[in-house]
Length: 452
Ligand code: GTP
Ligand code: MG
Image (cartoon, rainbow, N blue to C red):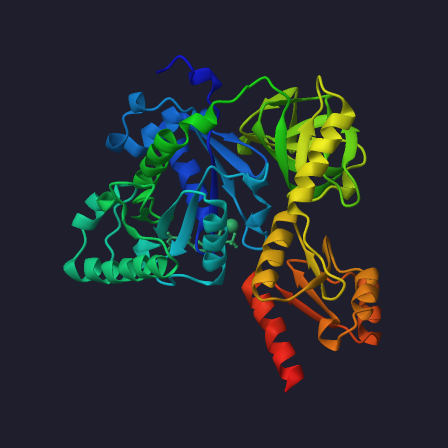
């Protein structure tokens, strides 16, 4: 049914995984092969995202895809840098990503951030596939650039094949330990029940056609209903990052997942203390690589529709929070939209107690994930906030009644310079980590030792 094609938005695909397992390389390869398919102009580079249209995908997937089977416009890939928490990727109480690719290095298998990604995918019910990356590092591998993986496997020695199989079954076992039944993707009948594992190499491109095929199939079969949106409605999005930009001041890198955002629109953005109401001064998109000289990195656009990444420049954005909602007001009242944003923020507000530890995290999503992990560990929270560790956090932690609660748990945040001496002089213990469960474990170990 092609009559609705123009109202179906592009599915959002998050690329997740442990540091160095090859997320960015995989996206580079997808972009690169698209360019070599002669479709360079079709690829649009967004803020934090890359839009690959259906024609380009089917060009890359070759014989594996018949484009007439699909009526979704393509796929919008979001890269999540290792240091940056992908739990930012939230939208209207759920996950921002419609589907996800979990990248796992075949030699390393599951690592802490893989486990963390799995936890978040499970909690948000996000369908995903596993990209078992770096198959080319298998000893004796005979690379078959850009080929479908089964064809490439036929070209390998028995020895190389069995070594790779061993690694792949290790990953399938780890997925099963995490509660997901999984198999090599070509053996999966029902992708809603079983996780497909796609062996591939971001370096040689082998297996990448397979990944694109599985992703298109998944989104077409299971996501189509959710992709039907009012493309002209007031835009809704999520802040990925708050960044200072020369000439613009504080800007928010945003993924728009519904409706359209126009230059000049009044928007409400979730802020540290209260929702920020402001008027858009510029909508900015990165220029294609070829056009970046030294003068201007960005191109101003008049409007941008879902799904897309865009940098929003507007006054008063310095208090905006990563992971917070962005809402265009349009034909509603400002108050109405402020209430909507408040309601959404209240959903993620963390339950606090009279006694407990201080928690700081880089984004709303990661704060929520921290709070969940601490609740499971039965660690009460006195105060939880987004942002770096400031002097007042130390002052608050010091007021805790019990010694074991005189602690600050910081996830993906820094200790501000002006808080360093406060911390030295205070009887407060600081824990910092980039992996949530390690942070909680560090704290639990400390409490145990204290009680001994
Ligand atoms: P972060 O963003 O830091 O979390 O890392 P990432 O997951 O984006 O990894 P990235 O793509 O930066 O790759 C890390 C390293 O692995 C780089 O040196 C890549 O060249 C290498 N690499 C990635 N994919 C492959 C692959 O398929 N084969 C081989 N041999 N090396 C790869
Ligand atoms: Mg990366």
